Image (cartoon, rainbow, N blue to C red; front, side, top):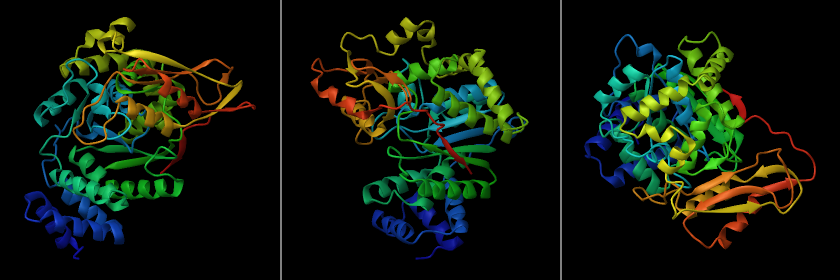
Length: 426
């Protein structure tokens, strides 16, 4: 099957205009899945995917400041919701085009749509205006951005062709390149609850995405981060908005704050707003503690039709996000042992949240924004028997089904030291 420049160009064009049947597309994708592509071919594929639709062009005065990030996904991963406003508060421009979740909880868009009235379907012209004015936007992919990827990914999904490094690379990088960004941070997760289960696989994907993105003129850094236990304490759409707001007000969990500051610092350094990564991280941290990141977040909520007044107080926020509904119940989970928390199994937490309705099992399925889990301990926390380790928010008065979640918490008789989630930088 032809993989040269003309062959790849013709393939992507045929995918986009519909002249190639689904069976023919799957045949071509299967060849890539089984035999791979070299670096040059992957760059060609990604460029053609990017150019299958519109590419955003920014006003000259801000073009060099336009950045974004991408995570391969994880349990409790709400980094984007705190990072984007923090970057904007520091002078960067962030057109964050995100997706919806398929799995244990919703994606970034689903979490933001917990906010009453919040609108994610913003046309490109409005996106450019908002990013130019307040510094960032958090929206969904429009129909005219990278249409080739939508068809290719749908066919990969139903054909078992998702786990291909060149195809994953093309899918992710083409969408970021279509945003017209100058710099990119990629967070590639590895561990029990990650797509890439082992470190070598995560590094291989990270290097592929970095090489291709830089081959398309985007300054790119990849972080390899652990995904064995949930990020922060909240898992569930509305609950993660609460934790994101806490982080934007300088009260967030340390692991989430670390990821926000390091990724933000890398991006600020990449576009010359910080002298080095450490300086950039300090700038991001300052924006979280001085209120400027939170103020940017409220500007974004207002600009996108959301009801920002729900963030005037904790009570308003919980009520506005549906967390005080009389139809929502809570069940506390207690430890059976004395000791120190040595592990919190992210997969078990994710499975419970999916069963509660926090996620979806098929594209287009509905989700329950309010349900989820709040974890009250972290790795290394001392615990006593009968101490609350988690609270489950649910719609079912009967709570017997939730108690097995305590098996997600491993308790050691010896003290534990929490470690950084950052495993490497590429």
